[in-house]
Image (cartoon, rainbow, N blue to C red; front, top):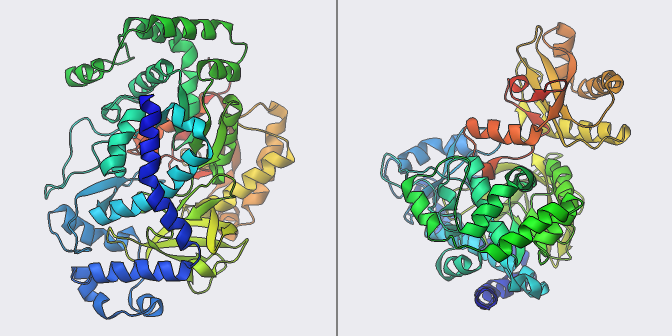
Length: 551
């Protein structure tokens, strides 16, 4: 009853933002200009605003002429000043904290967060959540699991005293919605402080097993949830024991403070423990086990576009009782798009930021109301956090329109290039080549990624592959992929010079997804930033994956 009431109150809090978004669909150009005009007016007195004279800009065209396209490296000196405690650099509004992100590499970026930027995120979250809660009332009758990103166990601050990161992921919501979220979450507060991934998985699984009314799961990477569910078998007995006794026995010990905090959440539940134990013994398959454990699960939200599609639909097969909803494009820097039920792609968050789009085929930047169906663009954002004409390097395809608002599907990063010897391999090209290869040979891999192995003489690109294929097929696969890569003139030139050897295949015995996530975390990436990639710029994967033939 309390969960249903909290969800209804949450829906009520989201409805005004949802109605405002629906009204905005009729005048995308006008709404976008209003967003930009407000950004310029509010930040005219910032150092950046004075340099480019924001106060005198009277049109989108003038803004585009006067303010340059930038990326993080351009803004790094300014953000370093903010981290040192200087205010008024990129925004007139006070910077509240710096949110870390690592994107597709380990290099940490710190993104300034203001109250205005947090409100911008809320203007996208409200219509998404309202659509979800309105269209499926059963979601409102159960609890939800929203993945948290593990944080440092100790609070971190910049040299100037600014907090680094939110204390909890739910802080993105802010205000009333953050308070209401605590009443509907299946997991306890403090989960984000678990630095050990295995301990995080254990506590999360215990929380989910306690939750017979689980109705919604929202994670970033579908692989994260698949790996979590795989732990049910090896940890089953201990989880059932903890569930029955109201105890907590994670693989690694907790700090006393965390143990005490999580201990307040624990309650013995022998009846639920008996049901879980029976399901673990009786279920004939993983999908049926998950159905028995969480019969009221209605929807799973995760990345399902670009190279994450294969993992997402594998996850969907394991949770047959639920609908899979692909997430929109959400970056730490800004909220680009959000999904709506019964609509293709994801709707542009046109009330959140000012957007421009660089055509993949070249040419001048387009505005939100100028996008062509079927065309691909790189997203450029201007935000209340002080990022102006900021290149995300995220490429999207226009798959439809809702009113005049474009519906977008994420395609991948267009700046992810591996270039050890001048070969300039692009992740999008590699992804297309792998998709064509697997389609041609009717292969459904559980993991596939290309990376350069520089320990070889000469170095060579290696396809790290976990799939059920005959050894005799591997030379044909390697040759076919090599031919695809040699369509890149730079790669072909490096091969002809002998700087790179022929492509190889490293057949993985088992556990590729888990090894990949663990390795990325060791390189400094947070779990919420780790994405499935067709091409990785790191070296040394042959020491991380278990080769076929190993015990």
